[in-house]
Image 1 (tube, rainbow, N blue to C red):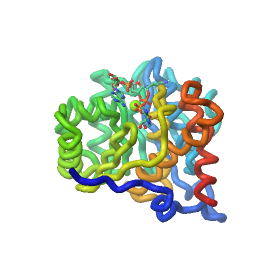
Image 2: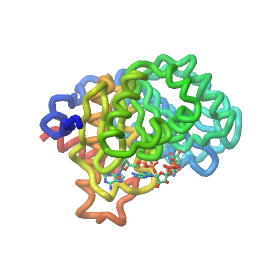
Image 3: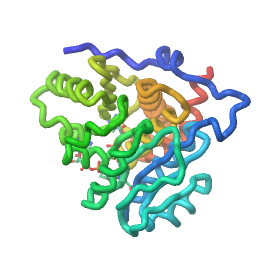
Amino acid sequence: MIIPIPITKQEILKIYKPVNPVTHKGIQGHVVIIAGSYGKIGAAVLSSKAALKSGCGLVTTFVPKCGYEILQMAIAEVMVVTDANSNFITDIQLPVIPQSIGIGPGLGQEQATQKAVFKFLENNILPLVIDADALNILAQNPSWLGLLPPNSILTPHPKELERLIGKWQSETEKFENTIAFSEKYNVIMVMKGAPTHIVFKNTIYQNTTGNAALATAGSGDVLTGIITSLLAQGYEPLHAAQLGVFLHGLTADIALPETGYQSFTASDIIANLGKAFLSLEK
Ligand SMILES: NC(=O)C1=CN([C@@H]2O[C@H](COP(=O)(O)OP(=O)(O)OC[C@H]3O[C@@H](n4cnc5c(N)ncnc54)[C@H](O)[C@@H]3O)[C@@H](O)[C@H]2O)[C@@H](O)CC1
Ligand SMILES: Nc1ncnc2c1ncn2[C@@H]1O[C@H](COP(=O)(O)OP(=O)(O)O)[C@@H](O)[C@H]1O
Ligand SMILES: [Mg+2]
């Protein structure tokens, strides 16, 4: 069994890049979030807001038509582009060229959405974060995994991981199979859990922040927004994943004395991102 390397504050401070005083929104990174379906537009809202609150300059969110007003009213700062279809995504046409793309939260797995994901992957060369239903779609169509750009970041929870790599009999086998998957497809695996591990080639990193307050709806959708935002700001993919999971966990550690485990929600992750970033400046 390979011993994981802890993702500590000390290591994170080596990665973290303070914001340049003379930067502007045009060079802070443009994120595209492709997410949502009828009843799950909240996932797109959470990812998009988390991206904005993690330092990128611009966010454009691609949703089915039913998400248009919801997003525009929920987050004034986000630009919204819609699919031709009402309730789920059928054709991903982006009018911008962003620095990174997060795809999957709340997407659903309709046949037409699966086709749209295939067409998107066939043409895309931009850095990707792949989560939730985009992972489930890839698990159903494993030959499409070869279309991912090198060092794409996959963020499965344990069930999504199982759909991708198959069942495991032991923790050792789980890590061995995840490493083999990561090497085969040249991707970074963020194995979400308590704690979260990151697998990159044959190295395993273990997060040191976070607590059970994060066991709440939308918590992973927020993580997708954070990591996609860091990627757009020029962090290399492994560093974006490491800093992303560290900050995500830290928000729950910071909020816990006020919210307790029970009352913490995914929106509290977003609300505490500022304090998490500030704790890196000390
Ligand atoms: N407000 C919203 O719009 C929300 C949308 N969501 C979206 O809903 C879709 C379905 O996501 P789900 O993750 O609920 O569905 P899944 O079917 O992928 O996962 C749920 C299953 O995984 C298991 N599981 C999850 N985390 C686990 C862990 N840490 N250890 C062991 N088992 C675990 C659960 O027990 C359950 O059986 C996704 O597209 C997701 O992004 C959710 O994020 C919830 C909030
Ligand atoms: N008990 C726990 N301790 C620490 N982190 C947790 C715990 N439970 C869940 N998390 C974190 O919360 C997030 C849940 O993600 P996910 O299951 O994708 O949620 P959703 O799909 O609802 O957004 C992951 O980052 C995971 O590591
Ligand atoms: Mg999820």
